Length: 180
Image (cartoon, rainbow, N blue to C red; front, side, top):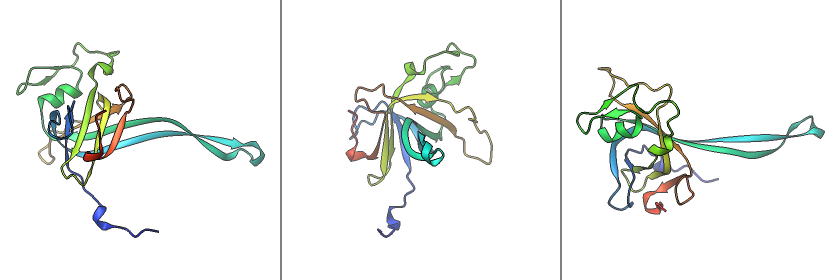
């Protein structure tokens, strides 16, 4: 058994970008600093019971995987707001979320898909690419306008395989990741 390496316990600050053109200098449109970043690899499993053992599990089959990237964006930014919310008007500096807007129930989120890059600030920390990210708002999301809390709004991106690479998600050191 390997011994625990306390130097590899990380707190990973980073920035969130959309539609990067490369991973060396042009990281795309900056959506801003984020906190509470999480990547949930929701995986279903299907147990197969053995009748000879009173249907106790004898095998488990891998089911669908549904990767979701979530974070809290820490600033009111036009690019971030217009990426996440389906009904936005105005431009940088005058962004307004409109409800109801022109995009209503039944609007296909695939028309709003982006390539998402969470770039860790340190090159020794892992980064994340979501190749075809569908922006969503969590049903329990709240925009907090409290004096005691930092303003932030929650963002969710569902990872799908709409990218030419056939991938949905890649996690690793930025130097080892690829947009293709």
